[in-house]
Length: 316
Ligand SMILES: [Zn+2]
Ligand SMILES: [Zn+2]
Image (cartoon, rainbow, N blue to C red; front, side):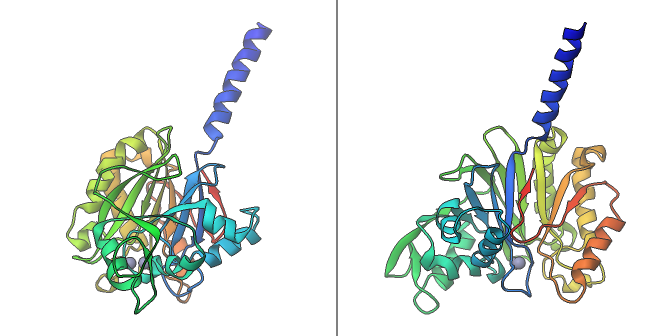
């Protein structure tokens, strides 16, 4: 009897430990959607404890790495994180608050891929990696070609292996004031655990679009199976921002609209305690506090909101 009890106990304990073992590490290098140039959208996402990251957007890179090293999130040099921990960049759209860190740090960086849709890589080739604004650190476009970064063109819904990691990413197109486009990535590890990273996006209703609805339908089974560890999604403005002045962004109320759309595919219960990491707050005035308060005050699906901080690791 005693043996059976201890056996059951150890089974329970191991399943508890298993359930608690994180799959991913997320280290924000920058969290805001404007305002502070030292803290703009950039998220390192990698397998837990592997120190092999892809940088999803790259508004701020160097200042974020500095903060992470100061916080002891990384116990190595800043140069080592930049050159060796970051295995590549996944860039969602051309706005500077998602790109300036990559460009500014390019002279100190190491050889690695840049993943993006053609509408993103064209912006690099036409506007950033050119002689009149910088120099061409990539492998295509204006001469001289320094060949440090290799462009990898993405196809919507076609998974791509992220080099020098065990991760894959399935890319999606988002609308960010039509016809301007942005992107999302569904990141998978080798054990079929997932993180969904959405960059700047308008709500379907305002964009007159079904991009988010289609994305919600795609990820719904993963939420129902508890395989989706987190959604990173933007909330740029408080509810007081008029809808005609959102410039392709979300408010707390619009996020609720989109969670309602998601719940149509998952059922309401499946969203309970889902990790929702809020990105891209525009920090003017007391916007940050207002947005947090508005999200927490009206949370009908009982999702678990996480407000990321620059240089502080989130493991889940
Ligand atoms: Zn932005
Ligand atoms: Zn944008």
